[in-house]
Amino acid sequence: NNKNTVNVWPDKVQTISYTSTFDDTQQCMLFYEAKMTNDNNPVDNNEHWNDSNHNDDGLKKASENHTMSQKRPLLVALHTWSSTYKQTANGSQTAYARWCINVNWHFIHPNFRGPNWTYDACGSDAAIQDIHDAISYVKSHCSVDEDRVYGVGVSGGAHMGLLLAGKMPNVWAGLSVWAPIVDLSVWWAQRVNGVRGARRYATHIEKVVGGQPNIDNDFVCSGTTIETENMTRKNKKGIIENEQEEKEKLGEYSKERVMEECRRRSPITHLKNAINIVNIDINAGVHDG
Image 1 (cartoon, rainbow, N blue to C red):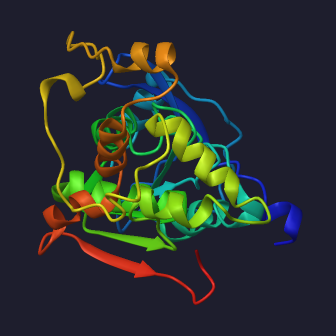
Image 2 (cartoon, rainbow, N blue to C red; image 1 turned 180 degrees about the vertical axis):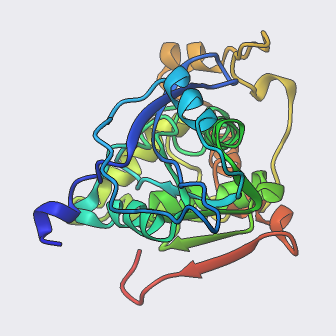
């Protein structure tokens, strides 16, 4: 494949939408459904799918047309810090889909509320729930081997991958993460005086958590989180939290609130839940970070 070919999503990958149970919004993701096979009907991965957009009814109908029932693994690929479900990353993201097509795995590339510079993104409850719902959606429409659900991500995608390991440990057979951010307060401190554009990541974190982390008193997240009723944003169940309105009114949260936002969005807080449950492959180069 030449560069122009690998930098676009394969025709067999479809754009679909599904409902987030967090707030009843429609969320988008890219999707490939593995072919069901049996000994008399081998997979033909040279078949060309031209449909680049698919809705719930169309996907359900396509699934019902399968006469075989062999379950296939699912790969959940996660976009990087500043991107969305459409990211190609010069072919590095599309490579996941091409691999899944080649080996006949299900594949999704969810949006999880887009770039990590808004309150709803960056490891929020909404973003986590969106991924959980995306996986549930594929399981309900396709023949998925639920013991072989895997995740992969780089940088911001690796940050989300480790969060998913800690917050949804029973979903995964394994996750592979590359150059992950594990502690938002520490990464903010590393970036706040950075050069060559690195400062922008500190700005993103400040927008998400409502201010600058109090690194003088609490530089490293302790691995614990404070669970209180008023720390849940309004969702469809009617649980109301007024912090967002206060943030818009005052410009930022209290220092304690900023640090709590950092903690609950940092993988280091939750990874203890994955011990002896999730296989995690963590990778970083000597020049990462």
